[in-house]
Image (cartoon, rainbow, N blue to C red):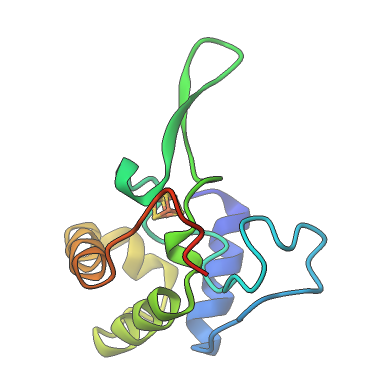
Length: 125
Ligand code: SF4
């Protein structure tokens, strides 16, 4: 995990609070006005699921990287909130848990997606 993602997620998991729209961030709104910024660094990264709006992007050196610019789903308030509650419920309160419990995280992703189907063409605000 990228060190910035690690640091950010650690704080969110410790504080156990939704961030909501962070208008103090210089990049806000990086997706849509009113977005929930709790999962600015996504615990599902890289989900590799284009239904979210995420996609493979070509890099300058000919490689590819998973890009999340068009994923509005995780920033929808009900999705952000339910994910936080789910993590609390399953005792996922540290970044190490996210890294260790990969299969469970995948399952949480599927259940969340089923309950709140993403519509990649809409901002879902
Ligand atoms: S596309 Fe969305 S759900 Fe997938 S890793 Fe990126 S931010 Fe997370």
